Image (tube, rainbow, N blue to C red; front, side, top):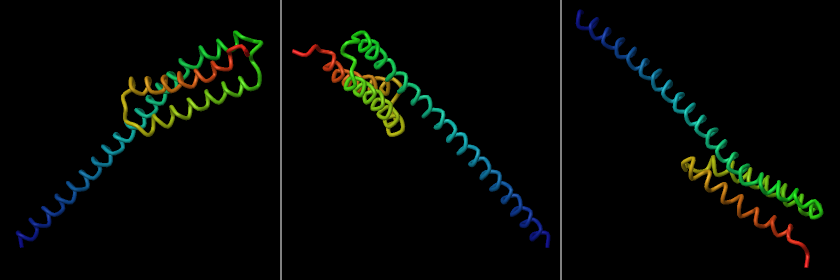
Amino acid sequence: MPNAVNNQGRADSLKRDIDSLRAQDFSLLRAKHLLRSRELWTRWAVALLSGIAALVPMIIITKAFPNRVDSILNASIITVCVSVLVFGTFITWASSSTHQELATTVSTYAAVLVVFVGVFLEPPS
């Protein structure tokens, strides 16, 4: 009989240990999820600031030529801004690049689009 009681005690102890490990695993999983979420928001902020840094000078320059600001140019500026925002959001969630790589990628994308807006600033020949 003492053997059966001893085995029951071991089984209860093992069950408590397993429950404790499950709780720890859940806590670790939740902590990893929170870290990943914070990292994604930080990366999105980097992408957003990179895009803004590339687009604000373009907007200032286009407003410096008030005679060339027409509906086509305004549509181009809005399209470029929205495109950079969408691209930055997509690249943030879809890649695992560093902050520096992310900033470079979004800034380069914005710079390429700015070239197309610059075509509208040239005086017609």
